[in-house]
Image (cartoon, rainbow over the protein chains, first blue to last red):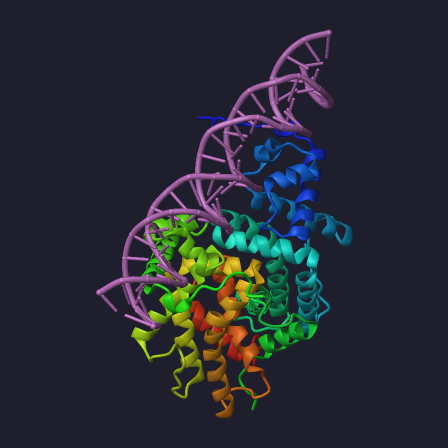
Length: 207
Length: 207
DNA sequence: ACCGGACGAGACGCCACGTCTCGCCGGATG
DNA sequence: CATCCGGCGAGACGTGGCGTCTCGTCCGGT
């Protein structure tokens, strides 16, 4: 059963694909995700609706690919060919974590990223399939940056080897995302620094 | 300018209000938030659409009030007259935190709460006004439970008095919500316990 | 030169939205 | 007890986006 559908990807128009990405990101930034429609994206991109529905199942899927494309392009021009494959390691764990966490703060505060990220997080929390794609393509690589740096610190004796690097990562990123998502307080570099310090030191008083 | 609208709340039908809450929660649980419609809620509740639009601005607002009503009722039958005003204090900070965090885990794992909570979190992350109401009515009281217990621990010398109780709370709740929202791993009592331990102890190795 | 399939454009039925207009009914007032 | 006011259930209505479809057109590979 060939599922009655089989578009030929080799014939796909790169021009249309890019135009759709640009239109989707622009509309979401300008008018918000809720008011953005597939028809609107198609019109802005100068593209037929069918061209969108041929390649994506939903508005959210379009935005996800558009955002991944944006992230890949900005990452490419700002560093190595691939995403954030490498991580800083100056030998000072706290300093390195502060650096990356501050960068995360800046990213979440950037209006260009904030609106699409919120929309995708919202959609992903409701739609498990989209959420899985979002996590795998966007969130997981970012978490790996922290986890690998922490593993290196463990090997160097700078961090407790008994701690699961994954849990340690969530201890840093979780509060940050929580405060951002629920607008429960300001997202500042100072907050990122405090998070690093307390995650490393713990809350128990020192003798 | 009376804004051309002024429904008389004293004449409101309690019967219809409850029926709308029941219908909204049932439909969201059965068919999901996305497929739930205002028309569907009205039909299921045996109510005119106008009765819903007279009292709520949107589907999300209805669900929020319905969920608050549900939470208030279950909290009332399970404890004091008001919400979670009081918190356990056995003198053992770690044990008390484990208890509350495990309860949070159970709540997020309960399908009856999971679906509406996800929907509200999604809507609230996109709609700032609804998000503010959600945070104030639901999230903030829960965070206060942790914060107050931590403050008491600081007064008793069980926790570092220099740490902001609010930040300490986020250190516990943030990772939990993060893992739940992005389905990034299993939500278990063991995870709650590990969170408490590492938040208290920190990641730095002990000499 | 040909041919197939993606393309832009837009028509189509469908459905939920949000507004409106009916009588109806219930509980407050005189 | 009679009156009246306003929320009530019901549903009609215009609007607009959804997702599918059918056109020619155009372009790239054979």
